Amino acid sequence: MNEFELIRRYFSFSVPTGDDTGVGDDCALITPAAGHQLAVTTDTLVEGVHFPVDADPDRLARRALRVNLSDLAAMGAEPVGATLAITLPEVDEAWLEAFGAALAQDCEHYGCPLLGGDTTRGPLSLTPTLLGRVPRGEALLRSGAAAGDRLYVTGTLGDARAGLECLQAGDTDDALLARYWLPSPRLAAGVLLRRFASAALDVSDGLLQDAGHIAAASDLVAEIQVDEMPLSEALRRRAGEDRARLWGLTGGDDYELCFTVPPAREGAMCTAMAEAGHRVTAIGVMRAAEPDGERVRCLDRHGEPVHIQGRGYEHFA
Ligand code: ADP
Ligand code: MG
Image (tube, rainbow, N blue to C red; front, side):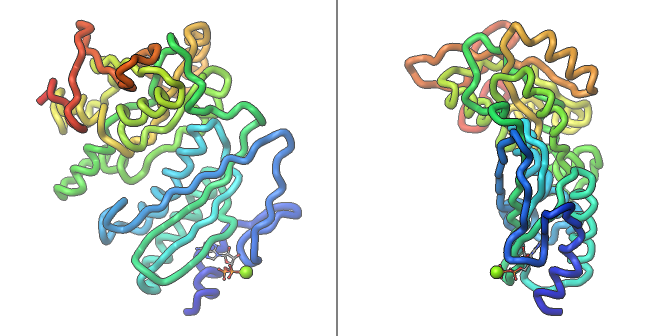
């Protein structure tokens, strides 16, 4: 099978509408929505670095798309379409069949047609680029938080870290493994948050790191109440209370949203999110920047500082 046959068979499942075009020409043509800005994001996934060798192609396709959709969600954007640059070591038809079918399903589910891409030979790696749209001026930036804003997260944290451990240990805990392989990009929550949040991002590198990005971009300190962390039962069972909290604070790959809300909009935000079925938890507050330049401060339930050593937590050791 040559390159063009491969593209036709496995990557030509989306049908553009109107004057727009997708796979098959030198470029895809997209009509920008009036009054909107385009949100563009890309994330590379390399075998052995971002996912284990011999990963299941179905889950891999979905994960590659979803981690990029999560970046759109974090901006309050909605999907317009995707391209996929893929490097394959060989043409394995069973692998491509499973990969293409899963990708087609997820693209359909998330309303994100595959508009183009590139296919080359090399070590397995995937680089989706996603296009989203957001009403002009309404995107959620990292830099919009103010001192006094409350810090929130959606869902629960630390599950994907536990899922990765299950994977490495060869254990089956379906709930945790699914949190690693099949993140749920919080697109609907992101759209709602355009009305309420002052800043947002998605938690891909661990809460402490990512909350630090909002703090740095907004020139503030994120003060986190470690005992308020939303932790799932599955995580607690697997990791125990202390390690569950540590993974909630430092584990990556959860793809929940972390956002700040001015106190005056907090009540309305909580009502709107609850009505739409999105779990949100207040985990801290943004404070004025300190001369020492520290961007994240952790406190326990007594208001005592909790010290961080590297990525680990001495307090819980
Ligand atoms: P060109 O050489 O003009 O860049 P290519 O031969 O690389 O075009 O690709 C042919 C068409 O197939 C293009 O429309 C491109 O966007 C699409 N395409 C190539 N690889 C993929 C892929 N993995 N997924 C989706 N579309 C792809
Ligand atoms: Mg060309």
